[in-house]
Image (cartoon, rainbow over all chains, first blue to last red; front, side, top):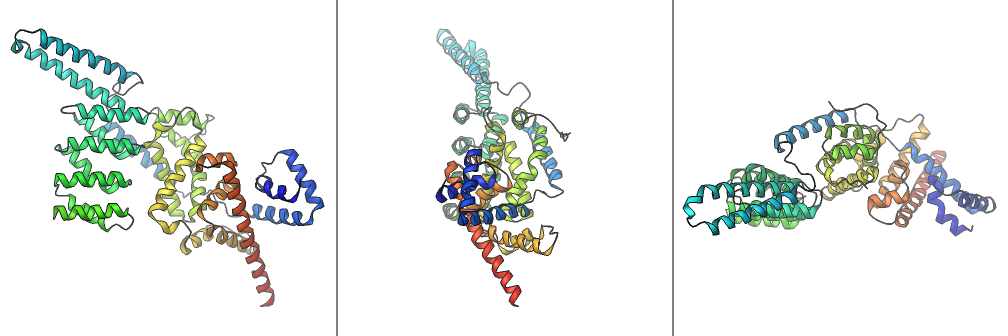
Length: 262
Length: 194
């Protein structure tokens, strides 16, 4: 081993991860090279001294804060989650989709075969309600999947529901706020825009904008809130436009939104 | 009640249970990792309050994104990646903390318990030297030295090659060497000739 190789292996040598043959070769070179010996000695002393800097003592109240956060999370989950059995196993979405197609076919066939549509109105309404329930089940099932593309499909399914129930809307709001994939979050914002005439969605959007971190989501929400003319929006836009930590484009858009509402 | 007792189960097994709905078991992982994650943030920021906030943020993110933990994920790498993202999000919004400011440095220095004056002085010099490292070098050094992570593990956390990590650790230690031994030498000479 020469001086250049000693230098190359120094990080592993210091951290004790250098394999035995290389370590032996390095130590052999060290004995014959005063320059490398001095360098290794100095860096080893420094590496050792770094131990004095390290601290693992987290604040005494850390566990208490964690417990409070966990409790709040569990309470929120219990309040928002659908009843046990509604959440998906992997195949639930596929099964529900198949059932949905069957029901849709039944409705079509029923309509085409019936000589007197008025006589079957009751049955049709019942079937349509079942279709809506299944659409919602499929949407919820897909929104709960681990794969981002499946969650994206779930958002798409939600957009096809005529009048989604509160559970679907709440799940979409949760997706908009917390989904790890920004594309899924953005798609959720778009679909929620279709249902912005409902109070829960308006409330969700108004609450979401101040806590969103992604500029793309912030911009989409600003545009939607401008269209909604919600009385709570100007104050939010004002704060966002003045927030020096916010993205410059978002600040400009918030200022623009204020002008639109002004 | 959140479990607190020591458990022989692997981190991955516990996290899988958390992912699958037994969120209270996250307490086991909090007990195992709170010190290390706090130490990671403290090494980067030198701010105890901020490090505690970021620690809590990491575990909140774990709850939110628990579905992204896969059967092939290694928990230690996964949590440090989340911690790094939490730190980056914070630094992105508050650029002043990318490098430690004087208050943070004083906090860092005040957190040590020196056994004698010389050790305190050495520690102070080290803190000052580390505080002035560029963030990517500081991050590599903290993970390699304080968290005892191998270069390949660090590479998975920060999203680069092990060779890049090795280079960063080397540059960090060489920069520290210059600053540390130069200032210590100057201080010694100044003390002698005063």
